Length: 368
Ligand code: IPM
Ligand code: MN
Image 1 (cartoon, protein in one colour):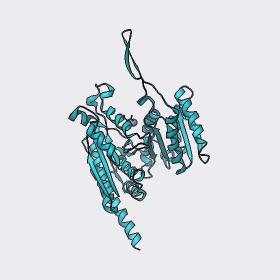
Image 2 (cartoon, protein in one colour):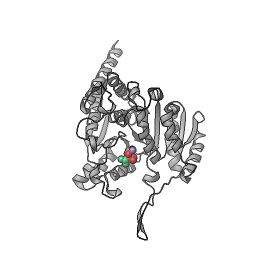
Image 3 (cartoon, protein in one colour):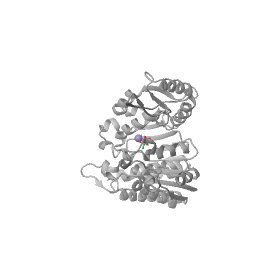
Image 4 (spheres, protein in one colour):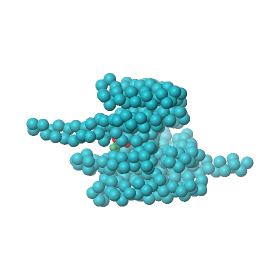
């Protein structure tokens, strides 16, 4: 299989973690005989410094022509003073809109080797396996009008939460389809006791659910959901929610995996799929080779599954991550006293080695 992958390392720890994800993809290409081409382009703060724009036209054009885009992270405190439409993050939002992916899939699971390192008790997190389906192109992030104005000498700022029926329907379908391949449950999260957008959300999701009689649907208010995710994460299978709620709840749910550095994401449904770890640019630890590359590597696995249909290869990467964790290797964010702490690049190498071994075993098995 040939894949033309555009890599956007971006800011902070982005370059360090994407480098490892690319190494793992190269390893998979070698072991399985694929041809993956990688081309890097600037985005975010890095691109502002080079050209004044967080999403230069060359970067955008390359992404639009790619089979898939792998992004590291975006955001830098250096640009905090800029208005929001000029910040590095604006480049990411423009990119998401241009690529058109409206469903952001964020799997959160408890790794058995890490269950005891979670800030939550082992018996609460062990066995948890949640898929967040976050609406990514609507809500407060994109709603108009937005801005600031002057009201009798005092500043006012405003954003608009807006959703249409079709925007809700299309992301709801993604959640129900995902639940069909999982444990058959969708929990839709909203604030329908207060917000009109949430009332429309709830009605629409309920109507779409009629096409999926096998799926068990329930609705939970976002404040209660925030608590249940911590108190009883195993009660959830697929969580479907709007953009900002999904942003907040997925960071919260990272404690189930032990660290935000573990989480991967795939943005699908548009013309080009976008893959990015959930953690941000983490400027405080950037450049020290201590960031956890497993979220970026797991995002690469999602790319092989969702964009390329390479299920075995995706599963090999995921099995390699499990093996490396079972063998006791830890980046600092998931380490406890006495753990074998490795750098970002060493962790990447461990995963590459494990991928190569799995492939060898596969060949040996087929040869018997
Ligand atoms: C995320 C990030 C982004 C978001 C930021 C960097 C714009 O927090 O992917 O979760 O809010 O969507
Ligand atoms: Mn976020």
